Length: 128
Image 1 (cartoon, helix red, strand yellow):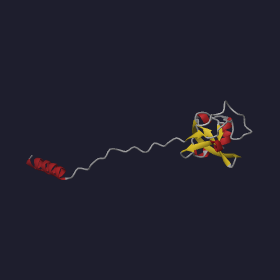
Image 2 (tube, helix red, strand yellow; image 1 turned 60 degrees about the horizontal axis):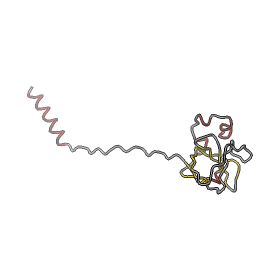
Image 3 (spheres, one colour; image 1 turned 30 degrees about the horizontal axis):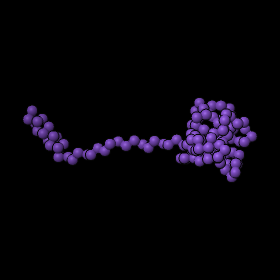
């Protein structure tokens, strides 16, 4: 029994002599910022069913300075020297990047996981 007490005492002494490691609060990984943009065209920008001016306009134009969520981009019809079109995050419609000031990095659509919003024939065809 005295040997057990001696071992316990040595373990306790060793534990007290060992400096405690400082535990810093856990830092969470940075939350990725979803890409967004603002309409820059004074007359607004049309939402289209496909990334082309030949495509049907859907709804009313987005107004100048309107904030919009962007899901991804594709290379399509060149508009004023800009060949990118953005797929909106809220609905499966496209806007010409020429008329949108983007904030954050907008991934190419082939790099984005598809969701229910993307599950339309028009969107699947445009995304490849």
